Image (cartoon, rainbow over all chains, first blue to last red; front, side, top):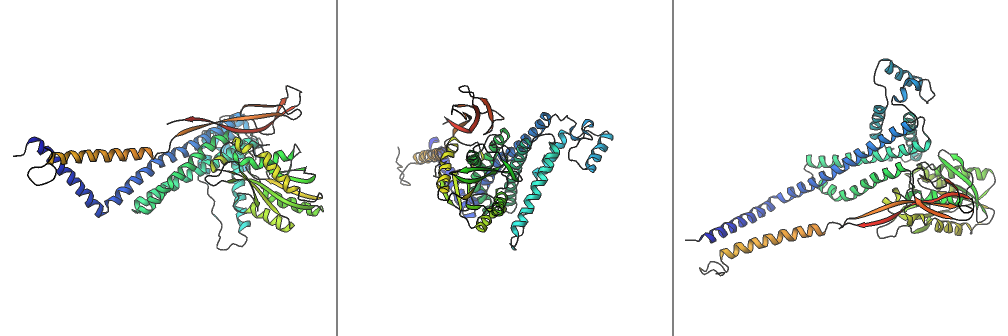
Length: 411
Length: 101
């Protein structure tokens, strides 16, 4: 007869053998795959919750900023349609003014803070349909039209919300909205892919999403941190181009050459130089392509001989590269989808002049968060590289230098 | 006795059960250890934004904390040394590392 001790160990042995047999059977029937998908889905869902919070926080912060700016500019809680604001020139159409007057007369709650929320929620779902690319003829002109439409629409709406605020304050709100739109979009895409994968039992889709999640989370978290940076008005890493332009300008008076873009006339190494940057200290990237195009056209009309065009911009570093490394190359150093970049390239080609690029390497996080000390300290080195290039020109030549980037916090 | 005397196996049932339990515990411990060790170490890097103000005349420089409204090129006032113009020349963030295990 077995003893009590041996019956316990018999049970343990039997149970462990049964467990191993079940695991073995499950492996053969493919339950391991379903279990893996379950684990992945659970991980993605957890991070989706984080993405949702990031999107929600950015929306709330944007709304709070708009409200505080309205108060700061002296708007009352009744908003645009309050009685004391009626009749004031605010850029509204006659129909808009009548519509709002009717609402107040009807005893409805005056628009104000609720209007801000409504407008922000509408803008957060704003989309741009990419132009047809199977027929690439005049695609640049078509892209230009789409971007211009979007830009003007956003500016118009923000001006309606903040009619009494400065362009600087409106630019902060515009950037905050862009970040909120991006975070909302990322959250919706990840949610869509997860739900689609679960519905279709598509484990490959779930697996790919799980593999991409660390990168997505890193970018989303950086965007959320960038919102705070932009709302505080601190210069970002991408502003290194405009910072170099600011230093080269040496206090010259800026002249607006195209919308949101200024040019300074100065001298670099004894040669006449046109320095282009976006108008600061607003959060603005300007239209450097249009500015270079206009300058080249004007210079040729005035009989000026252009010697070279130099673009200065931040560039993404590869993993392992040091932040702040300055590199020289050829081409238009601008991270634009096409319209501005092609204008710079065409201007250089039409003028028959070399197109040089000087970049300062940094990571994506460093580009959209506050400018790091290692990046800011490269200004003098970049200026030396520019001077080296300019010294190769005869003294009667004109050089065009464009500082590309977001000029937040840089006049 | 650890060894089975009835010829059915090398080890007695008690010892088999004990070995199974020990191996299970060791596997779980090893799994947990690997999970913990492969997590990236969290070191919270704190950044502080500084504003560098410089006198255009004598080159006098001062560093202070960023305050809202600062921008590069902003005129801050007069230099305490020679009454020249004080201008904001740089705004950047510096790292203050706090290691968190």
